[in-house]
Amino acid sequence: MIAKTKGIVLRSVKYGETSLVVTIFTELFGLQSYLVNGVRMASKKGSSKASFFQPAAILELVAYHNEFNKLQRLREYKWDYLYQHILSDVHKNA
Image (cartoon, rainbow, N blue to C red; front, side, top):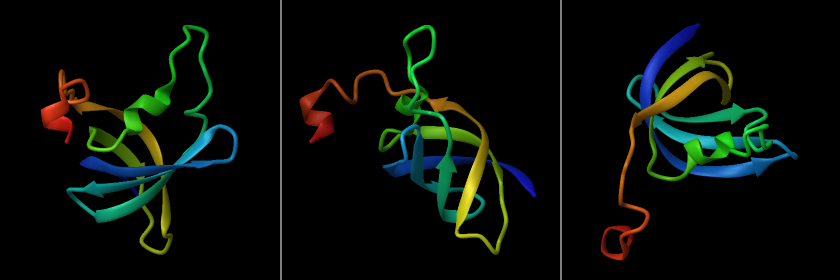
C-alpha cells in the first residue's frame, strides 16, 4: 500500500555505502523504520540527499507501507517545514 504522510526524523544510521536506515515518527503509522537507498551518493551538483534525514527534520513522505514488515521503504520525500536558524543558534540547539 502506498501512503502519503508527514513525519519527524528521530535518528538515522548508515547502512552500506550509500543507504540509510531512518527512524521516523509519522502521523499515520506512529514510529516506523525506513530504508532509504542511494541518499549518501554525491550528485553531479555536489549535494547529498542525506541532509533530508537529519534529526528533527519535518518531512512529507510517500511510503510503501506493509504491516508485516518492520523495515519500510520510502518512495518520495521532501521538506514539509524547513528550519532557518535552529542548527546555527546555540541556545535553540541545546
